[in-house]
Image 1 (cartoon, rainbow, N blue to C red):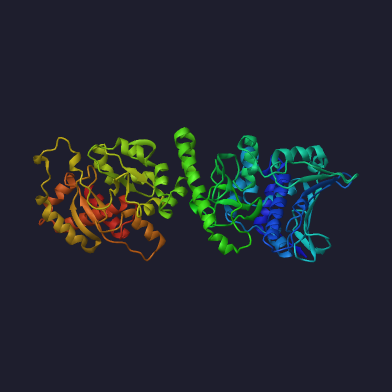
Image 2 (image 1 turned 90 degrees about the horizontal axis):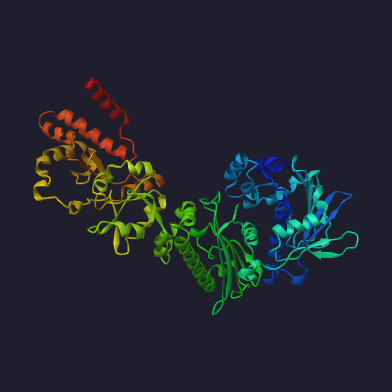
Length: 617
């Protein structure tokens, strides 16, 4: 059965073979990792009673070479693959983030060794790295429980073939017909060097077969890394295990290794990466934490091990306190697993808190990469919201770098009883907002919130350390108490603007909820704010993006009583009604533009502006 590779698969193969890797040794790491995963899955099926149990000692990975033929064979005693799985796993790439992955690969410079070495393994297509060192690859595999085996063959260029074949035992055997570059991998010493570097932590024996004597020699330590004492694990071993568990490229930024004993016993070894995964914001992305029971792999897709707002975390969780002979649904709702998950989640937040105090520079890098993700927990996880808020950093008007909420409270005005914030699409738009003018003049700090999730978590969190969060675009914000030298004679006489307000209301009608004099504008003529009972401006915009039928509520137009235009407009009331109407409409459109929205009638707005320019000339 001859087939062509799918388009994306062909692109990946072309990049891998021709330009990606500067360190070709990693092909062996990837194939050994696949073999280890296959044995994990078989052991789980045996332990849960799905298939007949075998002696655990029989599970191993074997490597042999044939110098006369120029070939290498890597075999395992794993679960094996059916013909459908062969076709799906080795003929197509159907992973989340494939397009971003390919874009990154095609832009990757081959001399950037640190980044390029682990790109393929991160996206679960490490098998294709075999074509860096082989002209042809054959995969002979028999799925456990099936009578017949299947053979997959490809040169990595013209497609692949699958045919029926004989194999006495279940498992997979990969045969590489090495190319000129790959001949160095025929030597046992070279293979042993690679295994010690990349795969020493694999818990199954990796054995070298001497083809002449048939003797077997174990080349790796063959013990689960998480069962070792912390002091016995090197930084390099952590880095390799981090990559094997799907942590991504680079090294782990933070390693959290914990062993708990008591009513519930478990061992956890999890990592926080130093680099942001390409698929961090894909809906399918979840924490890559493998669940084990007494070193027997159970699953790596259980949602209850860690919440989605920790989806950048990878590693393992091993406990003997769960029953393997239960359905996935029962395991998903296991009270024991929920307790462990809660403790592990708390431990991760505690370690991040330590990092915050111990290494601010490192924590800043963590926050830049994962802050917008971890803040999802404020909205989704009531138990963790305060802990996450303690870790959260925000841009603000009075600070060049981002600050913690505790720092904001320490520096706030003695008369200030709220945490002021401005939610906006980006920093540039926020900094140009007319809403900030009076706050800047009075040197009051305002948090600038630009992450979409900020608007949502604020809907469920009202305060931090007894200080309420207050949007400066929502309702009427009274700043009079911050004017230290203000006397009664300075108070604005709103009565002289009553006729103007009435006229502007008449002109704008249902476009606005109200018109009033502003106490926070300094330079701008006007601005729009949400009414006291309405939705915050930024939240309303988010709702509109998600639902095109959502129209939002009319907002309040605030006028700057000190602006020359507003004073001049006041003198026109009852004298030049048409000019007053045109200016009122234009002020409303300008206020919309300052909020990042278009005028309601662009043609009419442009016509008015053209008339103004013509009259000025």
